[in-house]
Image 1: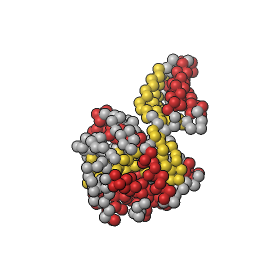
Image 2: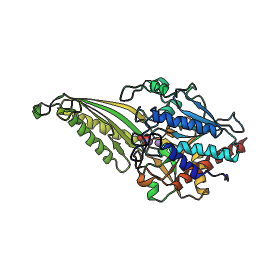
Image 3: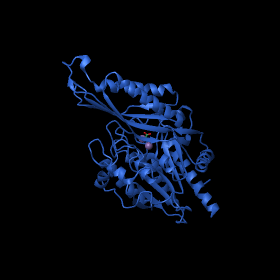
Length: 415
Ligand code: GLV
Ligand code: MN
Ligand code: MN
């Protein structure tokens, strides 16, 4: 095992520094993708990577790659990455931790004047969260060939602003072709965003895969009319149909307990006035399960619930399946490096399947990939209350460092 270790205090201080960019009054971060706060953290990240001796490039999706040369630069890089964007009421660690641990490893190698065999690369992928622009994991998806670049450029936020123009506006529509290079291996470090590691007092999760998920957009069209003078039998109330579907969607997950989950997270009511019967409602549904076959059954039940909900009221309901991601299993050799690193460093660890989506999902389609989790308090994430401890932060980054170095050393052995 390498003798090198990260500087945990420096890493924690760096995370807290970036937490100021887009900070909310309640201790979280609002750094939606391609906003001014996103530009601010990107500019900072580019400067810090350059100061740590790496060469920075930006691809046409705005993903930032910081590359530190190795002994043999004809080899594909070993890449560490995650994302710097957050949810509207995000926490300080989701995504940021994975990117800044990569930066901390660049700094650690620079301090030690250590040269790896393969080049080492740290990447911040654009728009992992999928909150401002849907679908999520957008830039890693384009990198992996799952989406076309121009499909991404044409996506609109809720104010009708286009992804491609916003990318240019913040100065990060780079020239490098997205997906231009192969990755030798990809490692992503993240908070668990669930309660398992904390409950079992485990320091490290060896993430063997990610569950499948499917997203829908539903529009219910009724008729606007006066809340006081329209008799109940004459109403075409889009909100009532929406409410039925919300309840039924919740039931779909309960029918497949304990692993299934379902969420209606975004609802737009028109005209959204307290004394007007809603004429239309737009809302989103997020369904997830570790097994693809079970997720398909959940989707069938959800669609049946939509037909039932609209049935007796005669309102028009449109359902669009706007994104799906099948379950993923990570690479055994990369997972082996993570497991061995956790064991050699003396950390309690267990295998775990991720409930959340990550850029590693897309990258696993084009490169050997693995993920590492650390615990977070009460499993809470996508929330300003998101918390974890400095000791967990350091442990995860050291497991990442040791796993990456072990992977790099297998290249030396093969040379
Ligand atoms: C990504 O953050 C997700 O929704 O899992
Ligand atoms: Mn994340
Ligand atoms: Mn997230």
